[in-house]
Image (cartoon, rainbow, N blue to C red; front, side):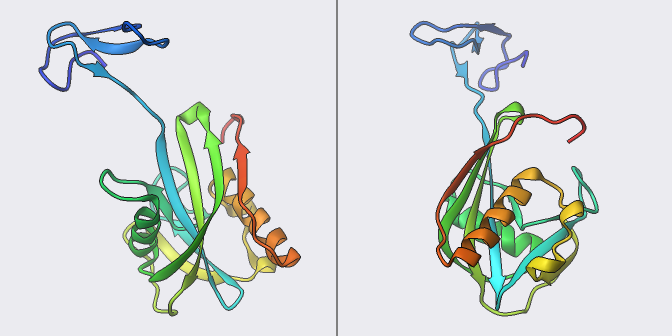
Length: 180
């Protein structure tokens, strides 16, 4: 960042008084520009034991499969984000159950949240950011074609919990891998 988003003057990268981390500070108006992690929110949407997946029509990971998920918008709750993203990516209507999985991805400044949910009907289709959508049983999940490690972690935990007969909350931290 070189210029202030408030007034357009140059910014300086330094530790502001009372803080412990360097921030971009406007030399003219004094605005401190905080940069915080982005939330990616989605849902494991189930229909009679099958899981809804979307094949990505956008980068990153174009052509690979994922749960319906995306960046949370300002002014919405995480539940609203999961509902919206599922509608946008899979044209699907869902009922949200509980928050199921939190995956910290600090090396790209993201936190991924996945809810458990249920499809309200089978009237779904590929949205603008999806090439196709489909329901998968556990045995047919395209594990080698999943777009993101957070989705793999979430789905493995989901199927393990479902087999155990009790869903619990899961939290993981992802470290960087080369090329992923």
